Length: 122
Image (cartoon, rainbow, N blue to C red; front, side, top):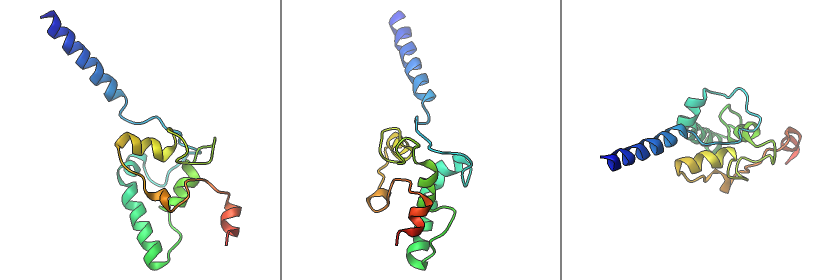
């Protein structure tokens, strides 16, 4: 009986520890007011980015509240200006926590750039 109680106690404690870590520890960069509620963004950011991508690629619309560039500008770390450089970087930490591959940065930069550089990089 004691052994069964011990096993149940260990199971309960390990389950409690996992439940406490229901979100990854990450560097949110500048943070602040997001374009949508954080819960909504956790669940839907990939759909918003895909829609924005389609508008940009097919219709030439390069502005928008859901652009990847805007995400990087806000969430790149203040330490290294990147959303992908370290284990606790904004994108890397969440995608690793959810076991999802990030393929955005095979084409796009994961680093914040100054507004001046963006305007004058032609």
